[in-house]
Length: 400
Image (tube, rainbow, N blue to C red; front, side, top):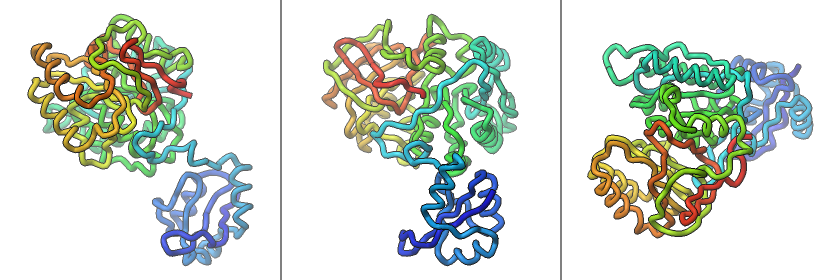
């Protein structure tokens, strides 16, 4: 067990830098760095970048001087070397994202509440479904809490953020299932230490509706694919084969090819396109415009849905997305359910008027969104839409 440092010969930002590593564990490395006054923001994947001005002090504190080649060799031998392509890090919009590992029976998963208040009976029904899949389910500490002053969120912002962070950093937890949507996840995002979250091993996140902003944030900050699917409180009431589609996506991703297999659809604009799956709830996509967590539709197949939004509000949101350039470079659009949004004919008229002029394939009427039988869609992975055939085919398994 040793802390090692190579010579300050790496130029960046007008200075020379060294690499500080451990050949035993990241915990040992972080402890040494903290005790030596090296800021945590200097950690990148498997090492700390430290300026030449700190080199002598770190050697005096116990870091062993070695060559740069020896740093690489010791990292590789210890199993701690983490290549950029294999770790969570920001990735440009339009690029395929890092895929998290699949689930297996016996895995432990966490349920967290980042948004609205959770009904115990609906939570229990969803947990029972997860347990029937062979998962061991851990309920986060504050899932059933109620905010003292706000009726529309489950717990204090800090508590919801702490629950998510604890679950994410726990090496025993293989996936995070969100308890419900509603509103509140936006209030949590800025409280998360994204640099610290990037140090954990990738894991799958499942949710929809308000959780669209979490999908966007994880894509933008961690470069990680996620799954737009049932929250736990809707999973217990899943209809048709909706729960089985989600289970297969999570446990048997190799068997999932056409996400729309057996699903009715309407072709509005013919054509075929390939791109990265992006989207979710229309209102939440619009709400994230201008934030550090926005993930635009460049080179993307956009899937969108909504609930309880009047036609004029849908129009306003789509118009805003277009005016800000969010749709620039979009490859195709898949329209899910617009539940309780008014007269279907008027909703369709708005969607056609705002989206078909984009000149890309458009497939509508998909059972995706706020329905008991919704399909699940992995976001951040490469797929091909054939609007004429009504198919949405994944290029490779969405989970590893």
